Image (cartoon, rainbow, N blue to C red):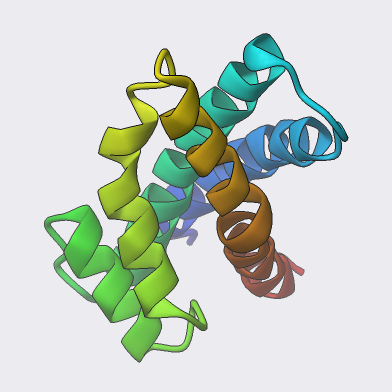
Length: 134
């Protein structure tokens, strides 16, 4: 019999992959204007939300009782699900910065963080779960 929690993380993972695909397309734009940049940031926010929730569901399926995004990231790092816990915690903290995309400097900083640090971590997470789905 299939565990409902296992089904849950797999369903959430499928949504994560869809949104990550959009984020990858958005980050491939060479010189985004403010509209593209805002869209990229929005895709990142959705992807990040699905990423930590997928990890949470996966960890709960393996027996953990997780209550917050920070706790999820810490446990995922300890269990080898993610490689760089510091970047994940930074991304968690920077979500507040990203809510202020109307400030061009904040938006440009967010774009650089997404392209240069966060996207790599999200792709690594995708690979981790891809190996577990097969």
